[in-house]
Length: 73
Image (cartoon, rainbow, N blue to C red; front, side):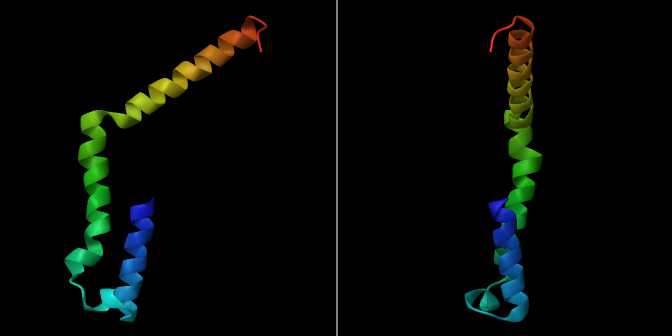
């Protein structure tokens, strides 16, 4: 999320020719978006981060449901 915000700010600053990003190359301006694509398409799939997070959430919900059924708090 932070990379997305930084990317949008850099693009806006480039278009408005405001500050140092006005003189930077477009490759530098668009690099946060490239990093986001690399994160979602490569790193996320290699380490299966989303699957691990979803599995942990399912286990937590399963435990909470079991505790409710057994009368525990």
